[in-house]
Amino acid sequence: MLSLWETFLSEKIVTFMREMLPERPSLFAEIEKECMRDYVPLIEPEVGQLLQVLLGIKQAKKILEIGTGIGYSTLWMALAPDRTDRHITTVEIEPERHQRACYYFKEAGIDSLVTPLLGDARKLISKLEGSFDFVFMDAAKGQYLNFFSKVWPLLEPGGVLVIDNILLNGWVIDMYWPERRKKTMVCRLRQLIEMLKNHSGLSTTILPLGDGVSISVRKIE
Ligand SMILES: C[S@@+](CC[C@H](N)C(=O)[O-])C[C@H]1O[C@@H](n2cnc3c(N)ncnc32)[C@H](O)[C@@H]1O
Image (cartoon, rainbow, N blue to C red; front, side):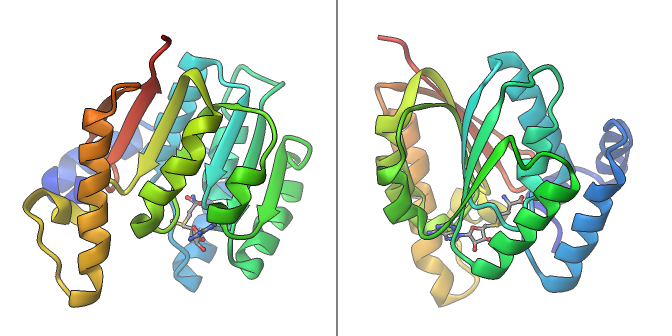
């Protein structure tokens, strides 16, 4: 399926923008291939590049990722330039994916920078110790509001929250759901966007990149 970005922008622009991305290590291509073969969802490379840029701007050190998949987005963040003292805690609910991610973290030589946790983020997040200055959410879209309520107490003032698939193929814009079983997900994402917009402790923007990405910063009171 075409990503939202590809449906809104001409193929020419998308191709050009992707050509402008810096060359990435060959391991990235290997993971992309595996994801394609096994139907594992993953971020678009341009979203990976966005994460690297945001990490550079924020100079984030303590990162929480919800939705490891097989480690593609974690790798993008771990290999972002500039910082060597960055640490990523990443949560995945599916044991097989968690295992593949651990394998790739070793292959990439980043296993000391990452704490991969296996389990349901809805239960695990509240048990985490310390705080985070950067959170990337890319898991079950219908659970984002639930994840947010758990993440909020852990997000430092000035901390950044990035959420992927916020526009969900554009369905949240006109509240269209192609199948009945997608209705809850679309409605919950719309609620999430409203919540982000009205949250007095956050400043948020949405980029029509990939499947739609929201970027919020926690205000410093
Ligand atoms: C879109 S994929 C993540 C892709 C990954 N961020 C990447 O780009 O490489 C979403 C992942 O979230 C996981 N997931 C869904 N619900 C979860 C939950 N409640 N707790 C932890 N992980 C969850 C899924 O198993 C899936 O692997």
